[in-house]
Figure 1 (cartoon, rainbow, N blue to C red):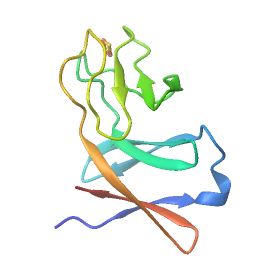
Figure 2: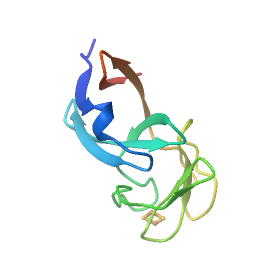
Figure 3: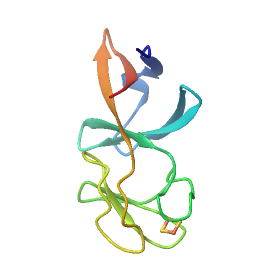
Figure 4: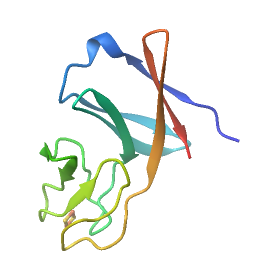
Length: 103
Ligand code: FES
């Protein structure tokens, strides 16, 4: 089973913060939205464009390439042109440090 990967100190991550970490060779996007942390594979399922930096609202991140939206909590594709869900990861905080772990 894969180990968790350290992201960083949560007090350095304000609302709306985004960053990426490498989990088993896969780039994972971490987003803080409404005080919660979410982690999902940093690849749009439409054309493999990075999701990092996409606009986040209503619990969804928008791919900047063609505008598909993915639900942060589930990874589900909510709007075309993407139809496949993006893989999600677990987030956990311990002693003020955020970690990501494969589900
Ligand atoms: S690459 Fe993301 S919507 Fe096309």
